[in-house]
Length: 273
Image (cartoon, rainbow, N blue to C red; front, side, top):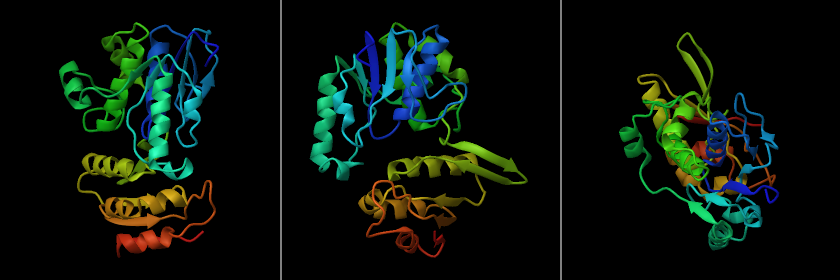
């Protein structure tokens, strides 16, 4: 990114991939050719591109503290939680690294107004799952992406017009199958703050239907950190299957899928590897 005269980095606990992808989409739809790196799959966008050398847009990962190595022109921070605190020395160390990241930016963008109120007045209808286009978190992500585009001279109106045909990021409320009353939806909700709106949205989108949640815990450390919150959110399903833990950095942990299923209650079962 240091080889580009203007760079935008997105760092936060939730929404990095969506905001980055939306921002790249906005720029391309408005005739720009940014360099970029996206940590997810988006239809009609490659994961990365060198662009024309004028602008670079990227996610900035907080999980290992490497976001502190960047010095972007603009930093976008949608939210901060204590996720990944275990890998950088604790909660305060994680928050300090966000302070360093923010200090490295010439300009920092954070949420300043509710997405719901802004989109109501703007009259936007965005093309992703939700009762009225985007759901709450996705509206907030789009608002921040538009704010990032504004730093490059693109108006909010043009930014949201560009997002009218944004295809969404894969594994973000992605519908894989819909036939004969059965709908299979995949979402990368691996934190309880993400599980909660995903379950709410599914209830709103498919009222009266049996909601079966198939959940794979992501990292033993995260499962232990938010164990009770995970159990509480998943208990909102009509039935639950807990898959084996995706281990990532550690191969074992004090709590696993069987313990989570037991905490959820009789509606849940664990599947062994």
